[in-house]
Image (cartoon, rainbow, N blue to C red):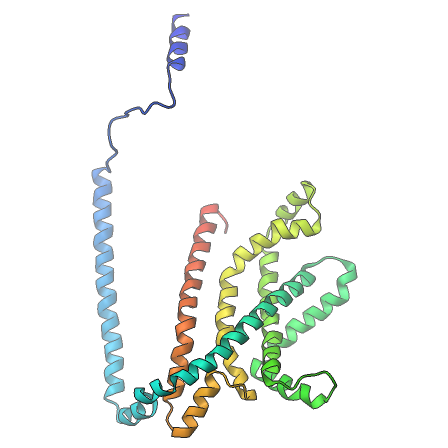
Length: 305
């Protein structure tokens, strides 16, 4: 009785809101301190080795390039910065066309790619002919170089001479880009949907969700989280490939650089156009890498293989 009453008194006297002192502020042990010092020393050594190796390799390449016999003519032809600054406004004006094309194409590709992915992952017997057509579409346009698709669409559709079809090269080039990238994005989204474990769908259906509710609230959110890095990679590639529509005569950044170069027989405008594209694609690439690392860390934390 005495022990029970003492335990009862101790339990009743416990106050969760009171801050108890369990021996002062926590401090790492000597072993932990030594491990931290060793890791810091190793990181400094690795950083020093990386810096020295980078300087040696890049410096050697720079010396080889500068001391080569044709460096003077190369620099005059490709790195005439005064002329590059002069033509830069025209290149930037053409780059607005690339950005506009990218926004329109990316929006259409997202809708069409998701639709094709849903058709190909559907088990409905009524959609069998559409699944066959979607599979053929993906196989064909993933196997044809986009430059050929642009040429076929850009010159083939006007040759039909059908009433109501446009001859606008910008619209035709955008259509060709959409047709090609829809096939790639559809496969990326389909792989994300198929990567979701069937138990997720079974659990959603057991809670009373129908097929479309399961897709919207369970399958697609998880699938898009998993395929965000490859979709961002496709976006970077899309921005670059919009320059291919210049073959149809669209005045984009590449075409503007080509016109400026043909007038002076100097290739610096091409370098300036490349720098303009890099100003957009490099930050997107770094953001993609960061998103990929974060996704891997989340999967490791959740124990997903």
